[in-house]
Image 1 (cartoon, rainbow, N blue to C red):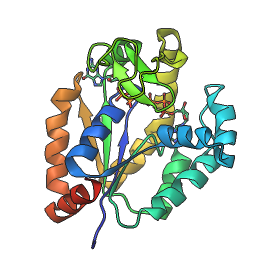
Image 2: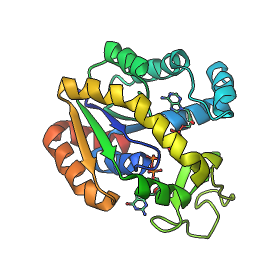
Image 3: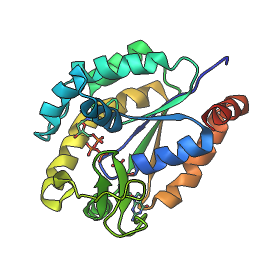
Length: 226
Ligand SMILES: Nc1ncnc2c1ncn2[C@H]1C[C@H](O)[C@@H](COP(=O)(O)OP(=O)(O)OP(=O)(O)O)O1
Ligand SMILES: Nc1nc2c(ncn2[C@@H]2O[C@H](COP(=O)(O)OP(=O)(O)O)[C@@H](O)[C@H]2O)c(=O)[nH]1
């Protein structure tokens, strides 16, 4: 394939990165790489980086930049024949700089969702811990209440999705993300979407991607993922 398409999706917890990434992966064939899922896979298979990352995640801390970049960048460099969408990375300026020196991004999607909406969504977010599959008791409920659709295992609510932890978490996100967003704005590749509903944002993201991803790349990516 002549050319790959590389995109990043950013936004605070609960802004819909996972939900929208899934639609982009399905609709445009980009490989969705979630840093959280990748960390969970590494933790589950007890890799050296996974064991180290776990000690931070358990304390509710971000994993240090050098651990994240050592884990993620080789994974991206392996993807020589697949276009991708990164979700959850880069989270800090140091991560964005490391990513810049390893590849050139085509597009950054930034989700700007009101605080009240984030609080409301996260208070209804339930996850299947082992896989990271996400449900919302109103927006996309599981087929059987409280149970993962695929494995039948129970769903949990993460402690940091509970309202008391949320405000501090969202404030921290803003402080850390602002310089990253500024870098992408300066590069002219940032596209920001603001609304309270994913279904209202999606048509705009979909037409942006239709305009940006050349048809031959989208067709080839879709063919190789199905
Ligand atoms: N780029 C990163 N840098 C540092 N730590 C990270 C990064 N990505 C993920 N982590 C760590 C910290 C997170 O608490 C943990 C799980 O990540 P993730 O699945 O993205 O959930 P999250 O609850 O932090 O965010 P979100 O609600 O936006 O999905 O992994
Ligand atoms: N009510 C409602 N919930 C949504 C909407 N979009 C996503 N969600 C839910 O909100 C929660 C956060 O979305 P998610 O994609 O996990 O966001 P992320 O933390 O940015 O990856 C999940 O439970 C989603 O199912 C929406 O438009 N309305």
